[in-house]
Structure formats: structure tokens, C-alpha cells
Image (cartoon, rainbow, N blue to C red; front, side, top):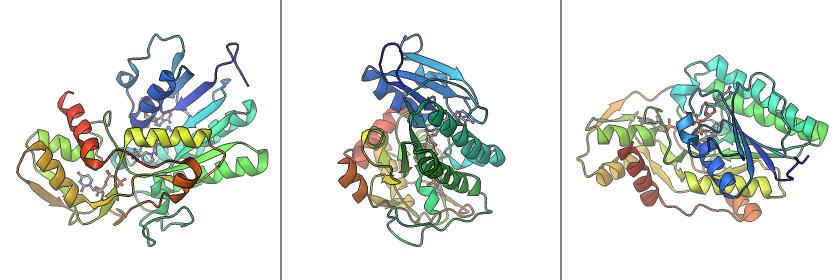
Length: 313
Ligand code: NAD
Ligand code: UDP
């Protein structure tokens, strides 16, 4: 559908959060119309302050587990807490957001014929036994553990998306996002990059879970957002991995951050949380071939930007 101005109208669920607000910045800069829905569980109006009052931007306080009626062209479905401490705070609510929230947004997409992009996650691979992870890997997820509300939530969200495509010919996109970091992560968000930087800046010990030998592959936020936009505009449904394939251990990450902050290495080792994946690295051949996308910002530069952001908070 089109609105009276015949501009594209974008709905971003979870747009007051870390990734959503960066996506909104990009779409607004392109001159598009943006509606943001958020219940402010982990997002804040501060992330959107630059757009409040702009006639192309609307902010709606709404919980996506409840239906809502809007006329839009593209739905970027990001609403869901992403950090383990936040999605485990109320796991039943996380499962409801993943299932009912996605169901409501798919229903809206079907009614108005909008394109629909789901922000899925590398967590659907669980603690992977195949390394690195291609999209064809079906994963190793514990269905009853403390991460399940999120992991299984995203898996059912993918299932729903593909069933809407099969049943109603909906134009869907599924992005499997790997660990992403950058400015606007919450300082108390619990994810490793923000935790280690904040601990370093406060001269506290950096908390390393387990022996710090587990790996992750960190993608800078600007790269990830470019990937999401390319995926929405491409002629492919996915699922498609979006992430930076440069893999490092958490101990290495802590050492790099210590060096960048110019502080000595002060690490305290704590128990590894249940089901914490031991290794994670995306294969991004699909994104390279189908989207002509690969990450451009290296960890050095990305961490510098992120550290500067936290210093200026
Ligand atoms: P975030 O917590 O910063 O943002 C999530 C946003 O959704 C917040 O603004 C929050 O208030 C909102 N929200 C949560 N539940 C809601 C509900 N029921 N109704 C309305 N709004 C709700 O997280 P993020 O890092 O920006 O992640 C965005 C999306 O990307 C999530 O779906 C997440 O699963 C996915 N993802 C992120 C990463 C990452 O590394 N950042 C990795 C994989 C997947
Ligand atoms: N982690 C850590 N110290 C922290 C926070 C996290 O060692 O203060 C570890 C965590 O156990 C995991 C990795 O860092 O192995 C990434 O954690 P994060 O919560 O950022 O993301 P996810 O586990 O969802 O990939």
C-alpha cells in the first residue's frame, strides 16, 4: 500500500533499542517515513531524541504482544530484548514477545501486504556442534534451559514467518544476526562488550565467565544495519547470516579492551552461565553472494567508537 505522499512507510518494532534506533537513523536520513513501536523495556526515548518532532517520524508506546492496526509498507520486526540478563528477567514475557509479537506483526503484514523482515539470531544455532555456522545448520538448542525463552522464541518466530510466506505468500526476510556492538548499547545491558568497557572505565575487575576461552564474532552496528537494509531490498527470503566472521575468545576481547583503555589486565573469573555457547562464528557466503554485503569496520575501529560513546555518557 502507499500513503497519501506515496513515500515508503516503515514500521520499526523495537525502534527505541540499540539496533532499531540506528536503523531509524539510516531510514530517516534517506527521507523515508518511519513509525516506531516500542514498550521501552530496554529501549529509551533518548535514542530517538533527534527525530522527535520531525513530521516524518512517529513514536508509539505499545506492547507488540497486543494487536495494533497501522497502514505501512515495510515492517522491520526487531522488538525483543536481546541481552541474556534482560530476556531472562521475565522469560515468559520474552516467549510471548517472540511468538505473539511476531504473530501480530505478521498479521499486520498480511492485512496491508507489507514486506516483513524478522530480526532473528545466531542463538537459533544454540551451542553449535557445527563450526563455523552456515544457514543450513539446524542447531543444538536446549528447549528447557534458561536461554530457551529467547532461542526457541526466535525459532518459532522464524517458523511463523515461513508459514505466513507459504500460506499467504507474504514477502518475508529473515536475518540471523550474530553478536553486534556499538554506541547506544545500554551500559548496564549485561552483554560482554558493554560490561567489559564499563568495568574498565570504572576501574573495576572485568568479569570473565568460565575460562574466557569461549568465542564470539563481533559485528559493528553500522555494518549490521547496512546488511539489514540490503536484505530488505534484495530478492531473497533468507534465512541469511549477518555478522562479522572474525572470531575471538572472550579473554582476547578483554585484553584488547584493557589495552585500548590503557589499564592493566584485571580479570575476575566467574561461573559460565548454563548453555552459554562455547563457540560462534558465521559463514557469510550467502550475504556476500546474494546481498553483496560483508562487514567493513574492524574490531579496533569499532571498539574505539564504542569506548568513546561510553566515555561521553
Ligand atoms: P534492545 O534490547 O536494545 O532492543 C529491543 C527493543 O525492543 C527495545 O527498545 C525494547 O524496549 C523493545 N521491546 C521489547 N519487547 C517489546 C514488546 N513486547 N513490545 C514492544 N517493544 C518491545 O536489543 P537490540 O540489540 O537492539 O536487538 C534488536 C533485535 O535484534 C532483537 O530482536 C534481537 O533479538 C535481535 N538481535 C540482536 C543481536 C545483537 O547482538 N544486538 C544479535 C542477534 C539478534
Ligand atoms: N561474558 C563474559 N563476561 C561478561 C558478559 C558476558 O565473559 O561480563 C561472556 C558470556 O558468558 C558469553 C560471551 O561473553 O560467553 C558473550 O556474552 P553476551 O551476553 O554478550 O552475548 P551472547 O552470550 O548472547 O552471545
